[in-house]
Length: 154
Image 1: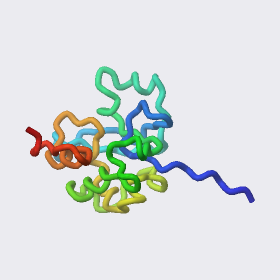
Image 2 (image 1 turned 120 degrees about the vertical axis):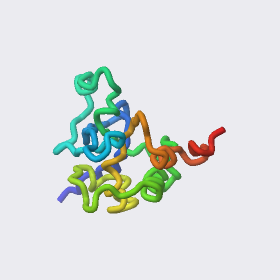
Image 3 (image 1 turned 90 degrees about the vertical axis):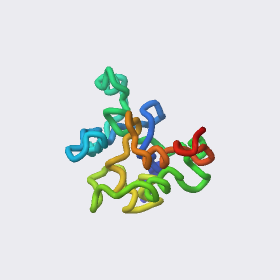
């Protein structure tokens, strides 16, 4: 029996221009707080095409979709050579918004789940790659290591 090729570890907060990117969630208004959007998971991730990106006009695609792509590892400012520091900070700084595990299709190969487990999944629905009014917690979590957090900036 031939071994199956190993699937790449996926970043759940990728940019649509990254090689192999797919939309795996849709950003929706949170009925409890319009200032804090929530992500609803797509049943099957959709490969990024020019047509898919054009559907979001006039807003940036990252305000409409959550994208995944193979983890860029060392090419990413959040990667420390072993772990995703963004996933670590999200778990440390953001409140859980889901008591269970959301119906996510990338979980088996997701960098955040592999690294942080259920705690990452419980915070994931509130993570929007491009946020017009991010919370202080989200801004702090998303600030790459080595850069001042928003409250520390001059």
